[in-house]
Structures are given as structure tokens and as C-alpha cells.
Image 1 (spheres, rainbow, N blue to C red):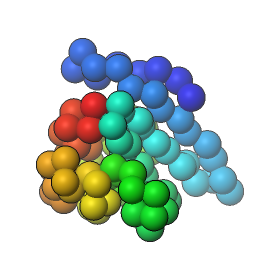
Image 2: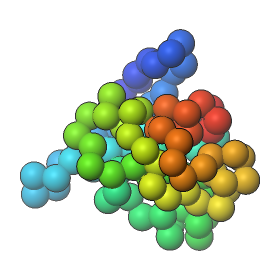
Image 3: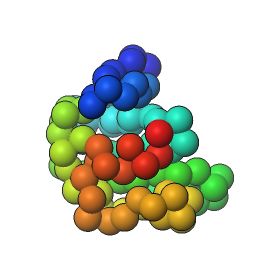
Image 4: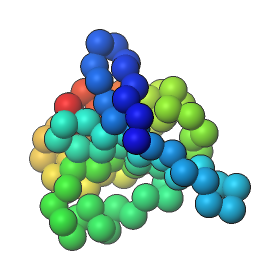
Length: 93
């Protein structure tokens, strides 16, 4: 994991490659933003706040990408499908 900064906020982030595919996650204090490879069902099972974006290859793209899916916990905190990743992370931070 590495520390990244955006709009004055601090996040933990990690990337790994699996057969040429980047698996990416950015973590706020109360939830996370993941790429489409991340399993939303697991977040539901554990009650975690998670928003999913897809078609991204960098953290900057994750911040700008449209949220495609949210866990129930993320939804309860105010994260909505259609907002961008940074907006979602600000809510979950």
C-alpha cells in the first residue's frame, strides 16, 4: 500500500497486476473505491462501504470515473451510482 493525496485528503492505495490486468483499490477512513475486479458481494457480506468504478488504469482515472455500483453500507453513507470516484471517497473518508 502507498499513501496518495487528492484535494487535501490522504488515502491508502494499492495496485497489483494479475495476468496483465491491474487490480486497484483506494481506501478512505470509512470505505473504499475499487476497480471492477473487486467483488462487491464480499463487501456486502462483511458490511463494508465500497464503491466500484471500471475501465481504469490509474488512481487519477479512478478519482474521475463514474461509480457503477455501491455496497449497501456505502449507499447508506450517501454514495450513489453516477457520482465520480473522488466524490464517493470524500463521503467515505
